[in-house]
Amino acid sequence: MFEKVEKQTLSGQVYARLERLITNGEWEIGSRIPREADLMEKLGVSRNTLREAIRGLVQVGLLETRQGDGTFVTASSELSAILHKRMSRSSVIEALEVQHALDREAAALACLRRTDEQLLQMDQYSKQCFETIERNDHEAYRDADWLLHRTIVDASHNQLLIDLYENLFEKLQISFFFNRFIPERHSEVGHPALIAAIRNRDARAAVSAVDHYIALFKSPHEETDGSMLLNLSGNGE
Amino acid sequence: MFEKVEKQTLSGQVYARLERLITNGEWEIGSRIPREADLMEKLGVSRNTLREAIRGLVQVGLLETRQGDGTFVTASSELSAILHKRMSRSSVIEALEVQHALDREAAALACLRRTDEQLLQMDQYSKQCFETIERNDHEAYRDADWLLHRTIVDASHNQLLIDLYENLFEKLQISFFFNRFIPERHSEVGHPALIAAIRNRDARAAVSAVDHYIALFKSPHEETDGSMLLNLSGNGE
DNA sequence: AAAGAACCAATCATCCTACCTTTAGAAAGG
DNA sequence: CCTTTCTAAAGGTAGGATGATTGGTTCTTT
Image (cartoon, rainbow over all chains, first blue to last red; front, top):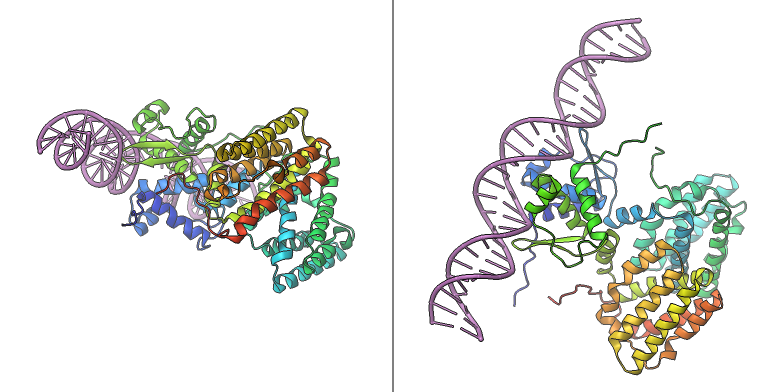
């Protein structure tokens, strides 16, 4: 007859409202949110209610409070925060293997579903990779490489895959370990082969191109300390 | 010189302590936790502090409070709760594609790292699958099939992969959609081929066996409403 | 002028008491 | 046996008081 009315606790509503402010980007990452007193007034709730909501966001990982200073935004989504937390307990090898799995599937799906615009974008980022290697700019190479990967994953048009990929590996690119392997020549990486496969919608070739790429990435880590835990904390304390 | 003293808010400590009770299984899923007054006394904190901790666990998805009734355990880990929440917004096809990706990688890694015990376990579950099909017991088949998959994933010895797999797809097995496809004959599924490949440590054969398996799974969903969202809520309200 | 110490205002952390709302289950009535 | 009513228990909300921490400012000393 009637839809059951969504019953939610006040603090739950406040939580949802604040979360939306964060995910919408209205409260930028790193910025300080208004003080408790102001939020109390603006939301029209008591201190306890507001604090319970904020505490929830802190535990989820979206906020961080510093007594005597304020409350700050630390992440933009629950998924990001939790996966980041989980990733920090993983080893490089573990992460690479999972990335391999997702890269592979994404490449195969991209063959089926990529748009021409996405293909063009891949070409562009691949060119950027080439250029950054030429001028030996490792940081810029990492960025371009990451964007290329992201474009391929986006081309899978599988939002679950996209979300997992982005949130699992975004911070990884900055990690210490990933600076070890910078290819000497662009051709080594196999980007051109991969993009060609996606252009021709040849899933088999795409997958084997990814296999080649990942193998290259893995090798330097296996020799050294690939089992060491990742360190994703931004600061070097 | 000195280790930095871990500074944590009281409610944070309470949160961690309660979380451990849940992850350790001391508080079983579905059970009601002690009432606020008792916890206050037992933990020696005020009501606000306790409530902030509990609210955090509620938002993360480990607890659920029902006014006038009590507070209940709903999940056993943060990862489980968040991924479950995310999965409920996914379509069957999306989930299957990600499962494919992980299955594939797991099979390949299992070829490298499986123990003899794990191989034995796979044989056993595969036999169970066979038997349950023979007597047309779909529910038991699903269970055995899930355990077989889990064993293969475990054999990858990649804890990140294991955690993701378990928490992404555990509840999926119960889903409506997965009851559609129950193979007529065990051989169709290709379990024997997959296990044989893992026994011989032949990664290439293992991967193609998984490909075959997933293709079989996908086909009935593509024809119908594979783009429909999953419904993972236990109750049918 | 530079370095250090003392101070101060802002902000979150904790605790307390009080009262409201909802729920499950017992009790009463049919 | 079923339905209605009542009630105790549990969580929900509110507001105030006090403590602790932080960052910046001001003052003092060299």
